[in-house]
Length: 150
Image 1 (cartoon, helix red, strand yellow):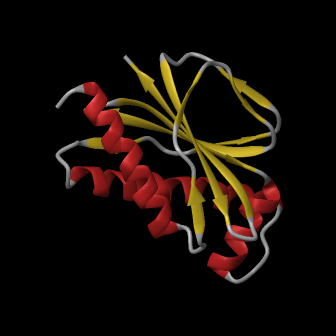
Image 2: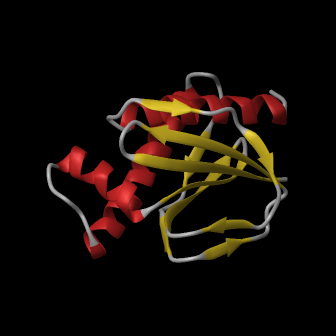
């Protein structure tokens, strides 16, 4: 399988994973190429991908949006360390589900433990990156970044 086919499989798998993990109606916009640096404004989680394709998945959002997702999934509002822990776990759920989804299409990947990033941050050091904007109905926006290392 070619690298571009792997990337397409990972992008499609990410969309499927988001829809199965996050319990909200969502509008997933078309992916676009992006250049570095990636600038995070408030809160996110980074998870490495290893295997047939190497890179990272970054889920970026606001603490308000992530807290709303957590409140719906766990029945209570989340803030502070609980919100940070949930953000890491949300990344784990999305990326773990992604591994299962893409394996059905013959792409073998594994994930690294999540790194929660809080505050304004710039990330450099990737060859290619794709940006996938997601609007969650009445909740807010997520931005999914898929970086690819060559």
